[in-house]
Image 1: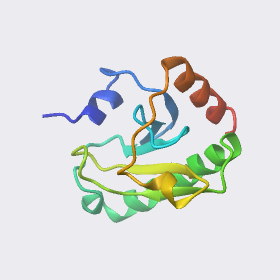
Image 2: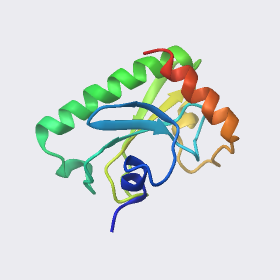
Image 3: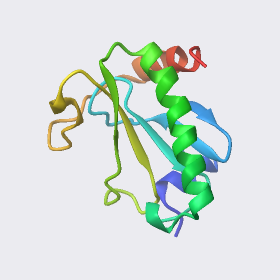
Image 4: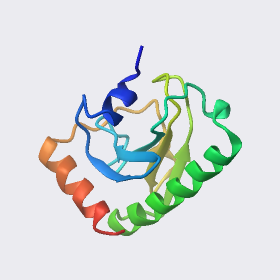
Length: 129
């Protein structure tokens, strides 16, 4: 059964796309902080360490490019990176703007941003490429 991320890749579920090639970066709709991005391979792979070595390296380089634009668009000290791997059975990386360690605390309440806020944030990040 396709994951929710595969449905996003296939256009069956909308998302706020940031950048894509063999990978896709899009805004998390349940973000820890404004500008929280998910990076996924377009090919469905459940576990990040099951991704072929060259593809995993390419995914990290892709995430780096996205994080650089993200940092230009979102006021923060750093872009944190997290791989949890339990939420969705499709490998993904979280890119999270951080000013404090708590900004990357997955036990905290998620933000509730409007579709307009998400659209504006995505457009602002895309403008930094």
